[in-house]
Image (cartoon, rainbow, N blue to C red; front, side, top):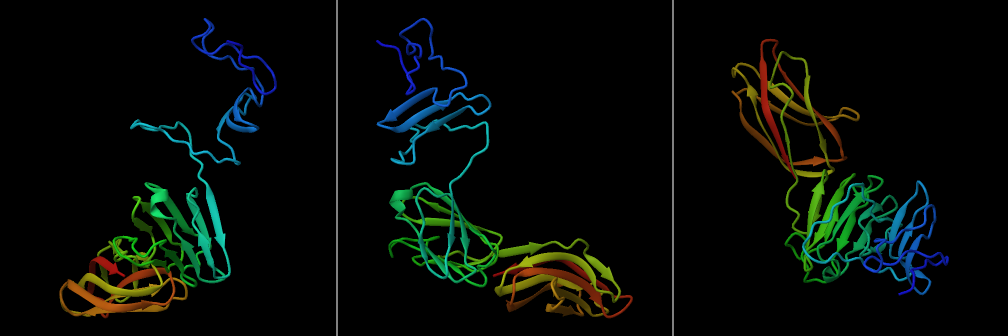
Amino acid sequence: MPLHKNLSGLELHYPMGRSSEGALQLEDDLANAYQVALGVDNQLNISTVNGSEEVTIGNGVQNPKLTLSGSGLFSSGGGHKYKTATLTGGGGTHDLAEESHVVLVDTSAGTEQINLPAPANVTNQVFLIIDKLSSFATNNLVLHRSDVAEKIDNATSDKTLSDSGARLWLFCDGANWFTFLDGASQSGGGGGATKITLSPSQHTVTGTTETLVGSVYLAAGTISTVSALFGEQYAAHTASLRLRKFTGGGILHTFTSVSAPAAVSTASLVVAGADWYDVFLFTDDAAGVAFCSGLFIEY
């Protein structure tokens, strides 16, 4: 068997098993120290350039797929780089590329639509969709199914992302889609409710001064329910629990109670703009004690 040579014509040692020298000994400090190619397109390239050693599999012409057969685990001692796509338009549609992993979407110029690939082509793949400019509340993003029979979160409907800063994990099992939304609101696709809980930094406040006991970020939209375990500790004065917008200080809602702590709630509360909202406790009397042990918000 002849000696292995790289594309530069440099000879390598015999393959393992054909010589007592063992493994192929690559030349040091060479960009193409070893290559496996189909024509002029590399399938495997090993660079031994000092300080920049690298093993490259595949090429950008044939775009071969890399498959790890069997049930063994894949391990890495370093970080991972993911293919990223940026989708920008003036209100248009975009196809979600099967090879993409992180998708940055800019809807600042208009509502955008992402056409999902056929589920059979992306079995067991995960995509991360990010609101690049925090503009989903102004112009929504729609995830459109490739077939009406497909389900997103067990519902045969498209999904709309409608809150600034949305970050959506999208998983396909080969037939349908499943999502996890991080820190924002969604509609359609059977996404279910977004639920937020807050435990105040202090549970009781004495006197008439509005005292900050916590903050919560609220998405633009209609809150179906806001409830709290709240009241005046001794049922002797009027206690207030107030949600006030951080930007501008506008009041979103104020609970009042002259009773001992108990569950209170309100429904259909409209949040005009996504923002942080501060939570305040106070009473109408210097001797009054407002109490709140928890706040629950559900979209």
